[in-house]
Image (cartoon, rainbow, N blue to C red; front, side, top):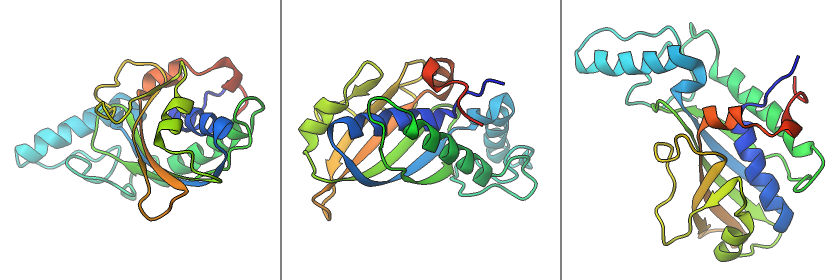
Length: 211
């Protein structure tokens, strides 16, 4: 059976492999902010109904998250949630490790430390990434090196991409690249991706190689 990689793993593999091609990575730490649409229409509808219920002072539906997601951020779901957030985090981690190990440009990028957070948004992934390099090339060189057909880079003269504005677009958007004030070899990055579009356009190389 053919398995398509998790969209968060696809986005991070595109980003990390491209970085590794030009500027070898020493280590990275990435926060992943997941949308309700990762749980299909039931997740979207539950977030919508929770919002309506909160504003109407009514009980909250909890079939998907078993906690209040509306106006909130979740590091874990309630005990009655059908899929634990930790399970999704492990799936992203497993798929990303496999994608980073595939041959080709950018292979050999080290596996990042990951934390998956459920965000109160309907659609689109966002990522906050901290990356330490063997030698920091600087923001301008990173912006230039990252840009490809599948990665749109927005320099400091533009507003950073956001998950709402990136809806319906291919690949990933990267912006708000900044030097770490406390580590001269590290930088911060902000990434966004349309999870549904990314899954639909998964490169054929990345299909059928996951479990």
